[in-house]
Length: 122
Image (cartoon, rainbow, N blue to C red; front, side, top):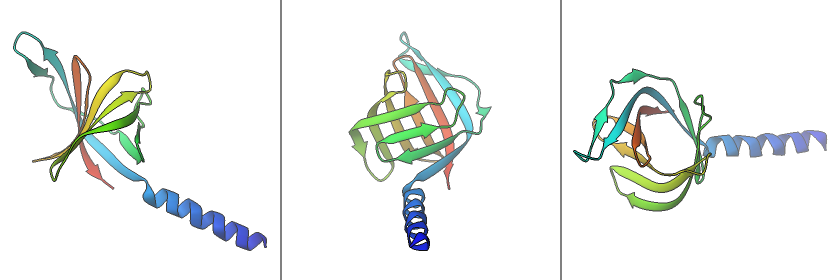
């Protein structure tokens, strides 16, 4: 009986871990919104090593801020990008996007700043 329970627990844990998608970032670019020119002023590209874990409607980052994004509404979803309205762990509204262009990017947009992570999937 004990072996059966352990086997079932192992199967459930394996299914949960398999369903979780993970991305690794290797670079970050921060853009600050310029309301005069209505464009972002981009900082230099910086090396980073942040993992993003997708668990249903929740995206968790292992960054210094322990960022967590709760998505609640799909804005766009097509072959090249997906964007959601979301709020973060501090309950600030934002937009999170996954864009597949020349590079794959995970983007977090607030009112005045944009974080663009260059990522690969595991």
